[in-house]
Length: 208
Ligand code: GAR
Image 1 (tube, rainbow, N blue to C red):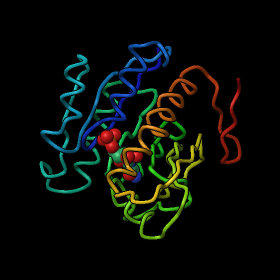
Image 2 (cartoon, rainbow, N blue to C red; image 1 turned 45 degrees about the horizontal axis):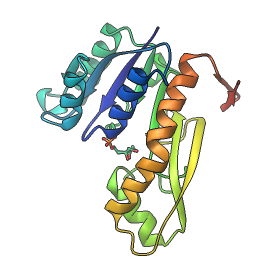
Image 3 (cartoon, rainbow, N blue to C red; image 1 turned 30 degrees about the horizontal axis):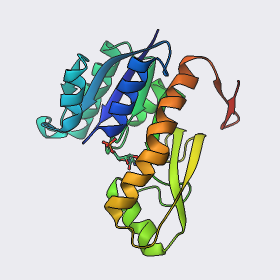
Image 4 (cartoon, protein in one colour; image 1 turned 180 degrees about the vertical axis):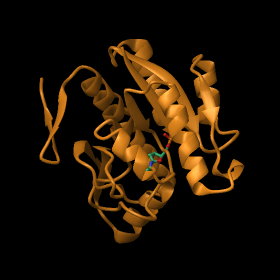
């Protein structure tokens, strides 16, 4: 069983898709060992508790320095014996020490087709606001391994989603979640857990 620790910041619909996938057996050989939020009182923590998954809040506000917060986060992940760390709407920069320690074992879901609309300042609803501002006709989502760069790690999978006339950021966000994120992220976890992903030369290779 692969032990997965899911990091979240808010609503947790991607977390829910993972919980549901494990329960339904579409994500095989995975145990969700814990959920960690950087924010108190978010729906993600409720979702974890409802599924009887150990849930923790580690907030930067509870620490004097960023380094102390980073250390506490890494300690908690280590103590849960994580084999894979999943960033499911975790809107905090991942400490370098964690990227090094969990090299090719951290995956992130991003709500655009990387390299468009990603990097510093592009997170959550903002990504969709920028896509609509630019007038793109197609957007989507990307699952990728996390490296030292911001949204720059090896791409695991992408799915395109149409932008429709009259879309608001909220409407587009929901369509991208439904048609791309909630499908891509559980599949990537299942592929990782069952030995179908390898990283070579900064690129991801898929085995069937
Ligand atoms: C999702 O759209 C996810 O792709 C995005 O935050 C949202 C979280 O929703 N992540 C990023 O923007 C990371 N750069 P959720 O809490 O309902 O899963």
